[in-house]
Image (tube, rainbow, N blue to C red; front, side, top):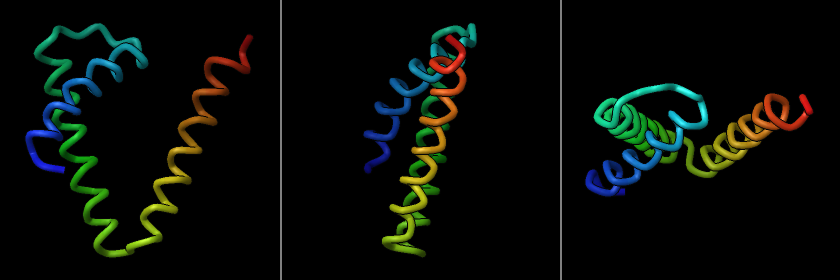
Length: 79
């Protein structure tokens, strides 16, 4: 991803993340959180992909599954 794409995606991700985590933040803070998160995440995933290749995809899949399990336990299983 290019830096511009990471910034655009990051702004949207920051908005979504603050809503999901129920954090009250102003718009500039929300955008900065998302942009920094997208930049850090993009760099980490790029490094993992270069270093480990296919294994990075597997690690990403496991992390994604862990997040979904956490979300399930926090929001659905409590009902």
